[in-house]
Length: 189
Image 1: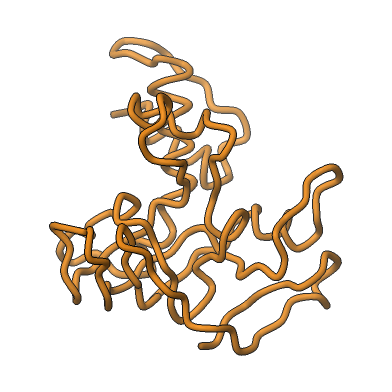
Image 2 (image 1 turned 90 degrees about the horizontal axis):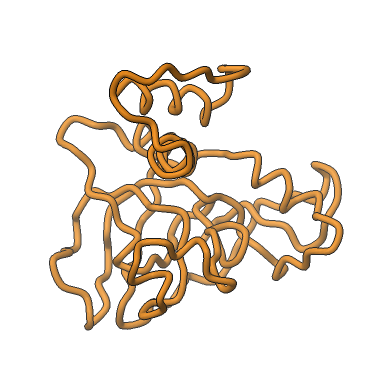
């Protein structure tokens, strides 16, 4: 399959568009044919490298994506081939105190597609079924791929960190990024 990946850190010249193996799925995963992938600043960090952090290379970039389920693991229920889905970009180990309480991002083994395991800038990506977000009727793959990481980050900041409630005033500094635009929308809701 074709994919956008890096084998080493550096400038834009280290980006490779080439063939990578088709992902295999585990019992709790599905295979998604990617129809749209969103780019995020995380892709720049992975490409450049981050001092003190080792990324598992080679790495297919991309944390945001949307597509169609093509294969379903034998432990997965409620998902069928042909389902239109967006992909929630973060994942942690199942069954831990953090994941059971909805705070999987606090587990030290938490990861993000395109940063910890191969991401969405490929023809196919293997995804834990728990990371699938059903797409509403009429939503395009491009719109669905532009939402997850920025919107989930903003929602977490507004609803859980700042605990915004009705009647509160909210100031979002530098409202020009995806996260800040979604933060405004979450605060208004």
